[in-house]
Length: 111
Length: 114
Image (cartoon, rainbow over all chains, first blue to last red):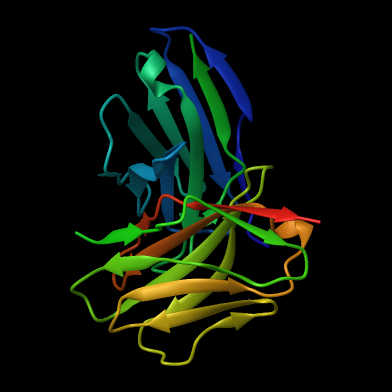
């Protein structure tokens, strides 16, 4: 079975802090994704990567950056966290144009 | 750009009954994939069912089946013999062939009562 793990289930940070969210997949998937999920808005794509060191902006990249130094790991970075970035963050991975497999999510609260 | 619409924010069903969740999408493409994902209260999103647009036959996975109407751009999910464990948020998603990014609907919360 595909396994996608995220470094934290819950995280509380202060405004202005730099925040790192880590995602690891164990199935050699080429594609990895970061979403944020908010009530009533569904899932919105922040960034995705289709190869090591490659990244593409999604629908809402502002305030975020990403890093993919190894195929299995995809990091989401909040350079200076703000309260409007309080949300659930979901990581996913996929092979080619197949279905995506999701991690358990990280509930981030910025105070 | 593709859009996915789930018009039912919330649905309720009793155990053992059947419920249908609606999804419509907008695309000018002819080759694509459609998915239903389930997100239980524990938050792990899992794939329920997948449909390839080129296939006329509706996909089925045990108690879950879809009604795929390509011309109408409709992709509904039917859950038969509902169980308490089916209670979750359900997301409809679209994937354009040749691309890797999904477009999601806003979700339908399914409540299951004993």
